Image 1 (cartoon, rainbow, N blue to C red):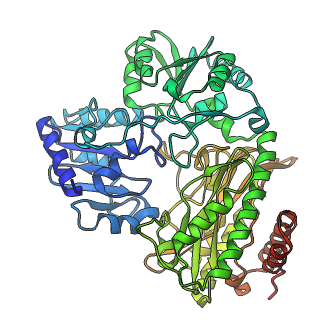
Image 2: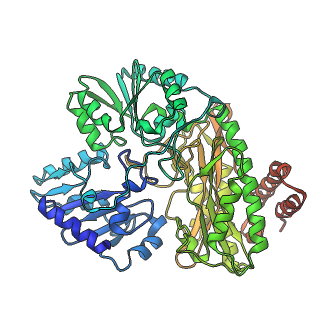
Image 3: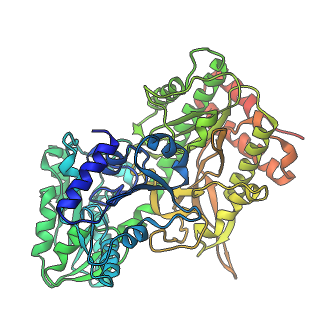
Length: 600
């Protein structure tokens, strides 16, 4: 079936069940929003839009895809020729997707969705607002599953352990710490639904999702044991032994809903924004008291310990070496008539894989030439890639997952002569990037408070980038980790703010994206550290983790003050000092030129 036929088949099922509106988010049963297994990519299958973020809503006479500014250009291309309308989130006149679904559910009508991929909080929001028009929800079926005949099965890849030389703390110690948090809240059980949480708690990693080393698993922490819900075929003897030593009981993945339904009169700690509606429904049957709060695991895995930080610094050195070798190769081969985005992307994959304790890419590499770089999450494929010429920019956003930690870096690289506008935009992006990197702030500050430091140079010329400035990064887990983030706007329940704590990592990645013309982004990872403590409170700042030169050919000092120029030169000096010991004589000579002092 093509997209239009899939939408029509869904409408037929809706008519049979008297469903007026059907809501399909980009989530799995753990409510992961971006990186999910192929089995859960219903939004993409239904609409034809392959981006990592979005929601489809289908009514009797309308089908729409809501996605954010990172994907507008990509969605325009992929939805062309279908009956699906692009709804540009955040743009004037575009309603919020959940409000649209409510508004188009008539009096006495039905709003349908799969309760396994919608949060309890959102399901209750729908139910409350539908009551006023005597309408209700239908969440017991996944209608997409009924028409997706060749739907991929659930992944069942093998898991593996991370030893304490990588994690810095044993699973038993982590469980003990989490139980202390539970005791403070008088909780009988803690339900861990985010894919990363059981991994952190039990020092386990997996391969169920490309570029995110997690297995599909839940955990239920009780006072006397930990239930670990996973397909047992994914566990080898070493993992089983480690789980047993940590007091963990292995339960079938599908048994969680039944086990929650059997609980009665317990105080259960869970986050209604992180538990799916079907699991919450099962938990509610036993008259359990719900402690609705963020998991204590979330904040602990976000704040890296001393061992993790030391490992991460090593990982970024290895990553910087791969990037330097890649940029050198790219510049030397830019004039090759066979040079393409795909060739560049694959070269970087190969160089990064040479690193110590390398596992996999932390996300699909973005190697986007010229206009393709305006699509923030564009990825070249075997069937869709651009050839390059020795002119303009190649934007490369990439990263690696190592046992030593996760990396995420973007460099916009000159592969030939640049225009004056390209230099201007690049320099202003770099100015904002450095402004955030050098921030000094008091403890209690959130990323929302700092975002303007990166955005201001572009706002000064009436340009914005329609995405956040930075996100948290997990330790050999998801490359996009909460709760910390750097973005502008007023925090909300769906986009909460978080205080920046010592040990948290955020990316720093402002950019310029001109549709059909160009894209520029510069990204480093920053570690949050404590500074001076005095009368005013605890001062904090960022320590740079990423080592790779900026693009000298694109820096126009006319747009920089003396302090910012000195920051660039100091950073380049450090890049050479950190990376040169790993390089051969030819590579060192190249890097010395790329990091030479820039003057006016």
